[in-house]
Image (cartoon, rainbow, N blue to C red; front, side, top):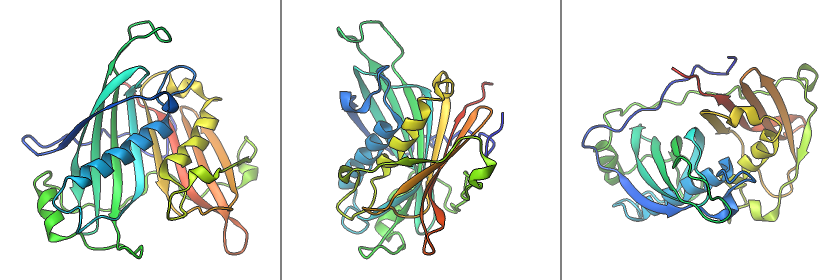
Length: 273
């Protein structure tokens, strides 16, 4: 299998470590025609869980601003509708300015007239690289209050950034698939005029309809956010299929109008043991 990275399982929670837990319900706005929760739906769940988690911490006032640099989603069994699901969120590693936040999602599938057949509940593991920010948008040292909370969750205190996806797109002439435009909507942007993290995955789902074999079994999606996308900026999608891996680059015009990468994405089959 050709992938931009070797598959490594995510870390497990330290025995006895505290974590945040909450229950949610799958809604129809997040599912595809096969009743599967889409990747953009999972990304929205992760944002909601993060907001709910920080609201009940001791550092909700001292460290309220965070941005995501990367999200990794391992879908071992997809969530489907109708289902309830439970999330557990904790810190897997951190340094002075950023953290890896792990989330386990386990669903409890139900049936109704639209989806009457019994099916697995769903199991998804995720990891997100969060950077602590000032109100003006600059990386900031995590407060002592937050450090105490994070230290209770993990022994890994020297987290370093290492890219998982190839950040630079190959020339259009080197890939078999032609570039395409991805049209953004005003509803894709947050109050800070930044493209919502989940909205990037809409472009990925548009592409996956032609690569459904990647979703037939366990698969990993990795998105790395490299540059902000603001209203009015056109997005060009460059894509490349390498065996059991799909690579995408969401490209925007740079200072000299040459295309630069705003986000890089990979969706790959998780190898079976």
